[in-house]
Amino acid sequence: MSVSFDEQAQMRASQPALASQAILEVEDITIAFGAGGGGGLIAVDGVSLNVHSSQTVALVGESGSGKSTLGLAVMRHYRASKGAIRFRSADIAAFDRARLKAYRRQVQMINQDPYASLSPRMRIRDIIAEPMQAHGMYSAPGERDAEIEKLAAQCGLPAGLLDRFPDALSGGQRQRVAIARALALRPELIVADEPTSALDVSVQAQILALLRGLKDQFAVSCLFISHNLAVVRQVADEVVVLLSGRVMERGSTEDLFSSPLHPYSCSLIEAIPVPDPDAPFAFNAGKARSSRRALISGCPYTDRCAFKTEICTRKVPPLEEKKPGRWAACWHAESIKLKPGQVQ
Ligand SMILES: Nc1ncnc2c1ncn2[C@@H]1O[C@H](COP(=O)(O)OP(=O)(O)OP(=O)(O)O)[C@@H](O)[C@H]1O
Ligand code: SF4
Ligand SMILES: [Mg+2]
Image 1 (cartoon, rainbow, N blue to C red):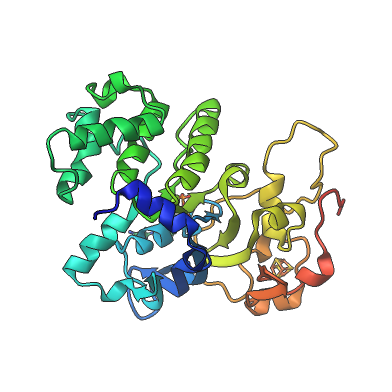
Image 2: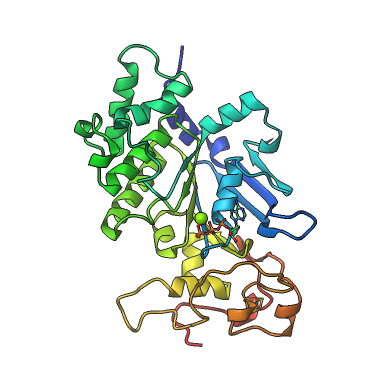
């Protein structure tokens, strides 16, 4: 007896053994561009993270911090020069053609730009059908159309739009199409690279609500990439803060927002607009800005950090578990005690 994709999703969500198992393990990954032999740019530098079943892990950091590079490495568009990426315990670097095809069904990507990511000459119905056709799914007459209509409804797309072209859709509707297409293969993991940053704020909120709902409905895990901590707070279970390709802090979303351990996390939280002028996080370590990675001998946050001491410029702070489940790469994380409301 065959099991439908919806039943598979329900089974995935209800199995305690699978629920506790990391489906994606990124272990000490380094990705370099350009000249070899140390002359190139290290975009990702020794990053480790896990994504568990039905979990959303956010990768957050300013422009150039290596977020997309890491996301593309998970899709196996880039190869790591060091470390390993494992999907359900299998090293993705070792996948042959057939296994890679299967992997690209299990792991889907949603990109930032809903205008560029949809072919203007295809009807919405065909855009969603394309991956199904490529993987030979729902080939019985009528079955594919029924599935497309169901997916469209689940993603909040009116059925009347299915026979239109992308030009006729708003930005939010196009992103819903991109999400429906990504879900068409019932993936286990979605890599969402800035999926709402090209959208108006009100539309952003709708798409984030949709992604939150779909996570439970489809039992899908998500690596959610964003430069915006305010957005991350709405969707992520865990947050990994990147700067210059390195992890600065890692922890549950709640912990990270209530008691950030790293001055850089604090500055990102501070950059979130708050209506209350007496709001917390008076700490000011300089606004987030793009940082092309120069040769860094110490902490990559040194040039902006109000707490730096001599060791910070000299030695790279290791990423350490400072409290249970709370990781930070800062020489002084324990002593500076960044807390909401603390005035520095
Ligand atoms: N294909 C490439 N060739 C050379 N350098 C690259 C390539 N892709 C990215 N880089 C460089 O690697 C670094 C990390 O880039 P990446 O796109 O991963 O950052 P990001 O965090 O996604 O930034 P943004 O928020 O602007 O999207 C940057 O310095 C970037 O210029
Ligand atoms: S290691 Fe030093 S420079 Fe880096 S964040 Fe900590 S205190 Fe600041
Ligand atoms: Mg990017």
